[in-house]
Picture 1 (tube, rainbow, N blue to C red):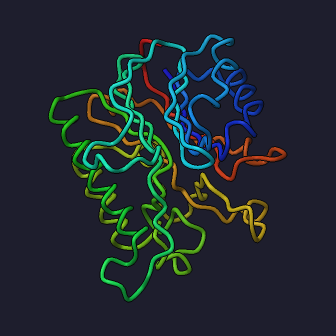
Picture 2 (tube, helix red, strand yellow; picture 1 turned 120 degrees about the horizontal axis):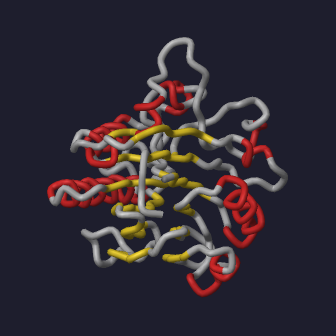
Picture 3 (cartoon, rainbow, N blue to C red; picture 1 turned 60 degrees about the horizontal axis):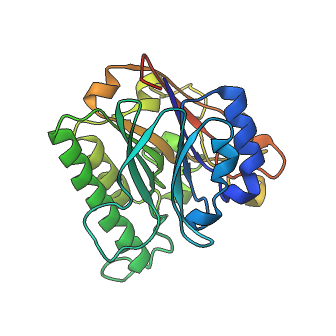
Length: 269
């Protein structure tokens, strides 16, 4: 069974690329982020006509998440629990292929407002969202569900996951508070699938999932690893591989992110 995550940076602009990539790779479940449209405007029929099921949480012109799957999808929740006033389209949790799968688009958190008590409203929102995600993960793990959290986490976990750690140390994606919050989630008993398969360290090539459009970051391979799969123990036991498909980032009019593919030993899709 293969599950992929991809921040497509507008599904309506890139539906052809997504449809072609699905046909070429044959992944069973695709998690999308930053779809940037309301649910009714999502090109769901394009994928249903190809034999997929589609579930969407949309928002006009920003955010937005979706799950596209070969197998039936049962929606568990369309928002991250913990704040009934949070209406941003950032979380979709489903059951598919015998797994509880959460597709998430974690807040960016910039700009950080140095000198303020909470480092600014956007950064405070990011940390609150991460605390809610930790609580949700703890609840699912306590119920011993086979859980997968996948998506754009907007978190650079370690120095090897960014082309210039010093330049990024004050950014919301790499601040110490962000990394601590991410580690607190992982330490509940989750496995970073990519790092489990590719430990990294000195002498290993960089592994990035995002390259900014500006300053020639893609041709210079100056990227970030911010798209992740975190696996509960029951799923980590089935981990057969995790890879970053760099090819879509080099295509014309590409998203600034590229897909990450999780491979499991078996599944129901």
